[in-house]
Length: 424
Image (cartoon, rainbow, N blue to C red; front, side, top):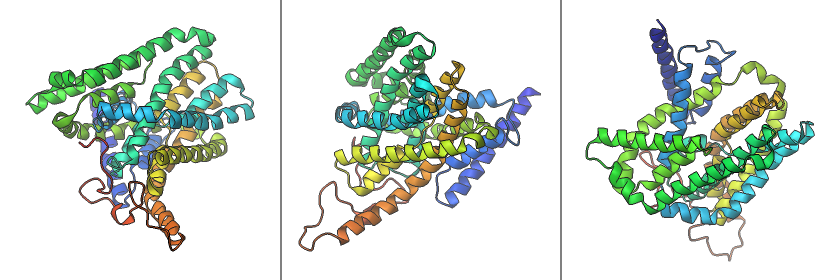
C-alpha cells in the first residue's frame, strides 16, 4: 500500500512539473518560480501535503544540486579554475563583505544580537550555486564571457562557506571560535586535496573513468561524483564544491560524452530540488515576515547586482555582460536554508527561519525574471550610451564592446557572440 502511494505521489509531482515546465516554455520564462510554487502547494500547510514521497524527494533534491554543479565543472578545465580564482580574490572579498552587510545590519536593527547577526550575514551573503547554474543553462549563457567570472565567484563563495560553517557551528554551540579550528582545518585540507587531484592528476582520473560502454561510463561518473561530494560534505565542505571539482578533473571528449549522459538526470533532479525547497516552507509562516524579507531581498538584489557588475567589469565585459553577471548572482537558496536551520536548531531566534525562507523565496522567484530582462535592458543601455557619445569618438571595439545584433541566442545552441572560456 505504501509503495503504491509513493508511486502515485511521485507520478503526480513529476507530471505536474512537466505541465508547469511546458507553461513556462510557452511564455519563454524560467520554470523555477513555478517549481517553487508547486513545492508550496504540496508542502506542510499546502493543499495536499506529501507523505510517502517526501524522503525520496529530499534525496532527489540533494542529487539535483550535485549534478548541477558537476555539469558546470565539466565546462571548465583545471587551468581555467586556477586562473579564474587568482583573478577573483578582490571581487570575492568585495562580494562577501558587501552582501553580508545587509544581514548583519538587519539582525542588529531587529535587536537579535551578534550570534544571529553572524547567521543572518551568511544567509544574505551566499548565492545559490544550484539555482544560478539552472538559470545559466535555461538562458543559454554557459558560453558567455562573463560566465567565467560568475562561476569563479560561486566557487569562491562555496570555499568561503567551508571556512564559515565550522565557525558558525562552534559559535552556536557556545564553543567559541577556537572550538571550530579543528573542523575548519579538516575542511580546508579536504578542499586542498580535491583541488590537487583535479589539477595534477586529472588525466589519471579520466583514464579511470573512461569506458567505451555508455552505461559503464555513466555509472562510473555518477559513482565518483557522489563519492567525492559525500566525502566533502562529511568533512564540512559543500558537496557542491566536491562535485564541481570532479567535473573540473574531466576534460576533452570524455567531458562532452559525460555531459550528454548526465544532463537528462540533472534536469530531472534539479526540478525536484526546487520542489523540495518549497516543501520545506510553510506558507502560513510567510505573511508575518513578508515586509522585512522583501526589504532585505531588495537590498540583497542591489548588492549582488553591484558584485556582478564589478566582477564582470574587471574581466573586461561590457554593459550587457555586467548586468547578466549580476542577475545570475541574485538567487539565494540551499546554503541560506542550511544556515537558518543550524541557527534555529541551536536556539537562535525562531523568526530567523521564517525570515530566511521568505527572503530566499522572494529572490528565487525574482532572479530568473531579472535575468530574462537583463539582455534587452543591457542592449538599450548600450544603445543609449552609443547615441550620446561625442561625434568624433571612435566606435567601441574589442572584447568589451556590446554587439546587440549578435547577443540573441540561436534556437539550437548557446549564443555565438561569446566564446566558451575553456574552448571545449
